[in-house]
Length: 292
Image (cartoon, rainbow, N blue to C red; front, side, top):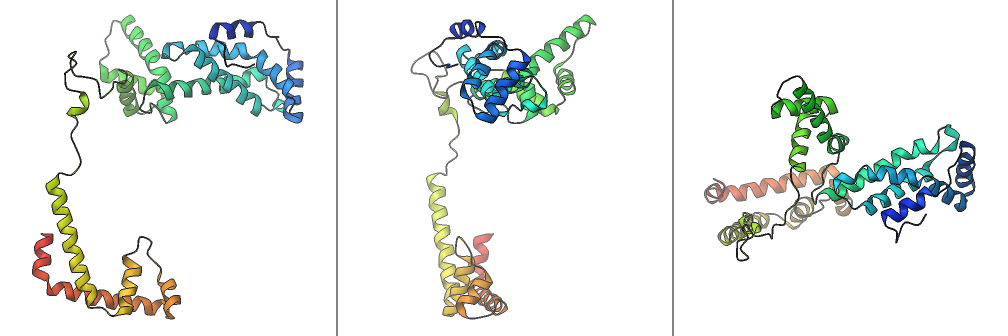
């Protein structure tokens, strides 16, 4: 069934007119699609159970997504189910398809609920779709007993009921408590009011800090050049290749290039560092004051 260009009422009316499949016909269609890739069989299977997909989509209306979008997602879930269905399992296609349809709709709802990803784990997903329902039931039960539950006790009860960590309940409560707002919205009804984005702290370095950082880098570079000047050409090459490259080379690769053993390269590297350390110690007062 092509879904583009239909509104939810048209899709519903079309789906209600579709044929009802008995178990034997459903099985034949499933085999024809799986074994022969018979597209006509797939079309009959999808069309027959589109009413099931639409029925499930209507259950998610309260989450604010357009009904036609929910039906589209339900249809995609139905098609995924048809693609993965194994008729040899002895299970009715409708039973198998329910899981795929529900998963497809839930993913769509959560992707579009907020600009911030609302749930990425199974516990967060379970909370998103069950928190309000479980909370309402717990409140009704407490009211029937003549009791009142404070917020902390309620969160603990929800965590136990849904089987999720307490911090997930606290996080999801916050995310479900309000909708997204633009940072470019003004803080007052006055068009000349300050935008919310102007209240955010500028975390970039100030000009003075950037100048100091640049000076420090130049100082460190000067010390490094002086320390390197105490080395011979081969030692400078080893230090540069081992410590100053974004992708440092191994002792073995340097040994192959220089015609030396890996151990000999290691010895030369250690000797070079010793020379550089002595050079820096000669500037000990200046270096010490820099790092204190």
